[in-house]
Image (cartoon, rainbow, N blue to C red; front, side, top):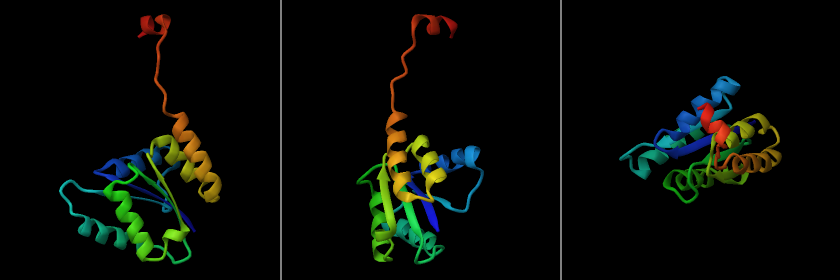
Length: 138
């Protein structure tokens, strides 16, 4: 089975997961975990291993992390490597709602989901500029 894992500093991953349920309802194939304020990496890794114990050896993962190179994502990658699951994983950083929504809806084809999630994530990043008419309406 293919899973989406959201990982972040603090409650960002859990909050994004909650927001996703507004569009996709609660799904068993989406997991989220965050590094708590003041939590050391070893105890965080233990929570990650506990989450990974829920999966089968042949499962595949798309991982969306908040920051590439951040402790949460690198810790998860280390745990995936140590359990032999990194080879079955696609790892993306800089997650946002557009990326996550596309990833969960398209995760049956992880390679396609990767390309679309990245494209949608980048497309979602824009400056909103109001015209004079729009400013007057606000």
